[in-house]
Length: 313
Length: 284
Image (cartoon, rainbow over all chains, first blue to last red; front, top):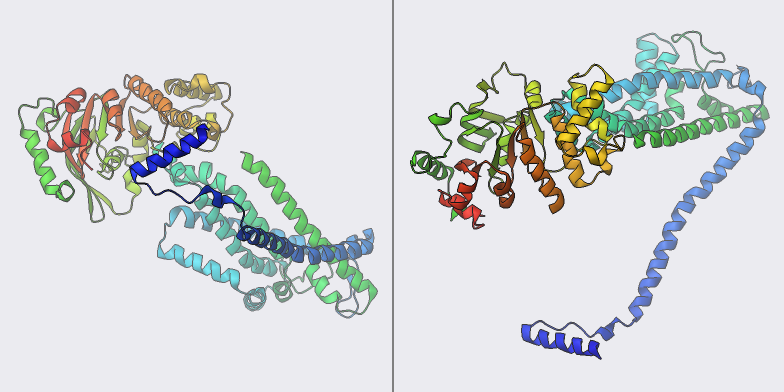
């Protein structure tokens, strides 16, 4: 009763104030367009679920194959002995390739991280948007898009031949450094820029120097992002083959020097041994793939766990 | 009408006021040369933009001086000249002289970092660092190497938090991240952070404009308390707040100083028409 009264009252008010009355509340009843909307929602939902499945299924299949075949091929002996023979007959173990991959990655990370992080700090905190920083940014973006085999060829011409280093760990590491640099630079820049300016202002107003502000605040908060970039760069270069073929050659022994000695690496085994018609070579090829995948997964897990710790602060 | 008033006209009005004998508390000119802080014919430019126009103003020690005026009138620029926060803005340039206790703070011999230690600043939006409450307050003393031992730092942190009327609320959670505090607490933490390096002057750039009424009145009480030890310069466009806390009020309009006066007088009996219109809310 009282409700009806209220509605009448408001209708009365509407008339008085000249407000237009809305459509009848009866029109809230479900109409055919309601059903159409529901169907549309469902179709879209199925589509967005199907797409990731499309990616996930082959990925899991691949993982299964490499884990299964790789695990089957895994023996202590193969992990601890050197490769025998080259592209003609593949056999022996992977010790030289495991050490070689780790050595090249460690060296290139050692070079690329400081250069990339410092350059990123420069662009984010010091340069503003001057010509020089625009140039660095542009170069980095182009560099990130250059096919790695081209970088490998440049490394071959410059480091292996021109500098006379021969196929070597150092030539390979420097080539991969160039490959990693743009990723580290850009993620460093972006993560530092994400730190709000109000924090910079607060620090400067306290009489902080720029160095103190960067060391104690902006860089510190950017570390999770920077680490992600570094690990991404490492994951990418772990899987590189082409630039290494040009610069590391392939060595069946663990090198005792960084120059003039060819180095083995896992991707080289995957690439060459999969083409040799022998069960042993194929086993080594699968085992290498398995180890590479394992390394990438470990890097990702370390990244996630480490980042969670860092972001807590 | 007012919107198209040119800078020269405003300035003319300001100068006219300077010479008006009946307003006795005006701080222009020779009779205030000995002020704690003295602005003498200060102009500030950002590139071609003339932001502050020929400002001459004396500010007394251990008082609250309120800078008020509509948005974009140069209030923030004005207080930022005092700790040289404008230096980093591209194309910043100034003429005239700003001195604190007789020292020209833009002289080439003045270290802008040491200046910022003596002139603390709190911003409109609370900007605590996303680290612990303790580390926020300890940041300044740490970068300026003010302490040798850990318990000295504890004392500095406690003292600063007490002065900012925050100690009782946070003493049991100093290790918590500062972002967990409420907006009002964050702002008091920022005040504590500014106090930690033992400044003499405190610049507050609309410190309560982003806070709820309860937190605002706490900040206001704090400001009144702080002026016993510090010289406070407060930017606000909240008239009631200005009236509650100010000893002296300077009214800026279009970059020019229109009127300066002691607190109740300027609200009750503004000498300038622009001030009067601003105070009564008719100036936009």
